Image (cartoon, rainbow, N blue to C red; front, side, top):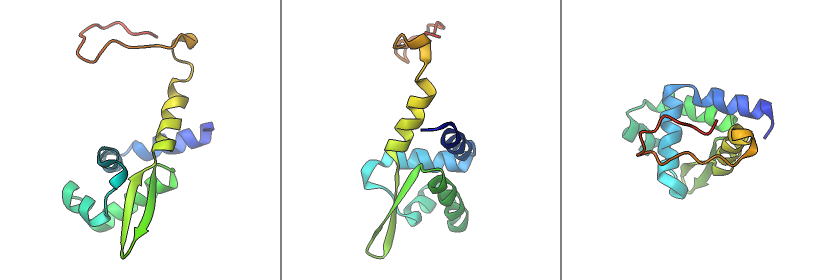
Length: 111
């Protein structure tokens, strides 16, 4: 993943509705969601949702498949993983950082 793709993906996620939509798709997994189901479940008007899905697709973060008369949207896990890899590639000076479990109240970090 090159720097321009990273910036595009982060810019797409730096908007509350798009972040909410992307997270819903990640939680749903490979089954994906139709726009109608997303609009109803997230309380987002259909035309607003359409705009945000287009932006997420443009950033490569969602994929679309036509199943009969329906479009199904899924998170693009490969792109998401590439983004996470890019962001953490040089973490901890290459020491393979492992943060303590989230339940830990420790304020130390590896970096």
